[in-house]
Length: 239
Figure (spheres, rainbow, N blue to C red):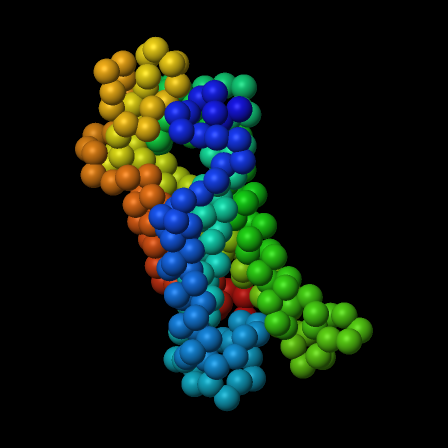
């Protein structure tokens, strides 16, 4: 369906190298840095019996929250983009919700798209909590009993972070798309165009500052940073 609404979209939705980089680099960096600093994988560290200092345990959890929120933002944006087109009503511009825009417009949001972004992010957080070492394996008969107490705590925290990253990141992506990324509409092909052309008109974006890939980089980076900053209050809430 998207190929009927947006120029350059093909069946299968192949991603180029820049898109893969934008949707992985910061998250992978945070995950690798946590592994280097903490020296192990496992459940959340704050409030558990560990040989790590409280400061290092908190830093490890902040990095965990950061990369979970990063990939939750990526998933939320993708789900919103792919499933939002199924909405029966036209999307509305996030900075001017009274204005309806064509499907595929940068900054356009719909109820279906927002629900999809929240679901995508929540699923990312839930899966990380389930399958990380110390997660679901710890409650199976062959799991290590020493980590079972952290299971429920980790599920709650990471699912919540995933929800915030998916929904909040998608909203941030839409805000950036509606302000610093131009959207062009081809009046001849009746679809969103990738760039300006003889038959196009600009229908969105105050400034043409960022490409779609850079909008993804900025929104996911901010999502990761904010998740790291709220790690302490979330951990204090569930410990």
